[in-house]
Image (tube, rainbow, N blue to C red; front, side):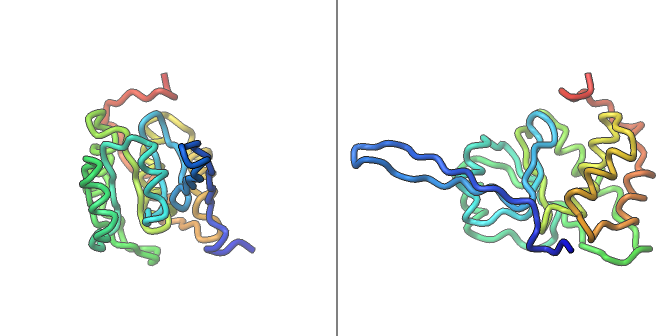
Length: 185
C-alpha cells in the first residue's frame, strides 16, 4: 500500500573538483518533481535542501498554490536569485462537493503559460492535488486525452486521488486559452 512516504523523489550527486581535491554537491529535487513541458516544472513545496537543485533550473518564476506564508529562507533564496513568486492561495480541500476556485486556477494557468515567467515551477504542499489540477489543465491545452491526463494525475496522487479533482479538470473550459506547446506541435 502506498503512503505519503512513497512520494516521487530523486537525488542527484555531482562532484566538482576544486583546488582542495574535490567538493561534493548534492542536488535534491523537491518532492514529486517533474518536467511538465519545456520551461514548466511541477513539485511539492520546496525546502532548503532543494535550493541547490532549484538553482540549476534557472527559474524566473515560482507559482505557489498554497495559502500559507512563504518560509523566510525560501523567500530570501527567491529574492537573491531574481525569481518572482506568484502565490494563488488555493485552500486544500478533501471534501468531494467543495468547488475548486476556477478563477484562481485560470490566473495561475495564465501565469504558468506566460513565456516571460518561464522557466517556472508550479507547486503545492505535496505536488499532488492542487498542482495536479493545474497540470491537468495544461494537459487539456496540449490536447491530451482525458484518460492520459488522469493517469498522470493518479501517478502523483497515488491512493489519495480525488474524483473531484479529476472532475474539475474534465469540466475546465480551455476555449479562452490560445497557447502553443513544444510537445503539442
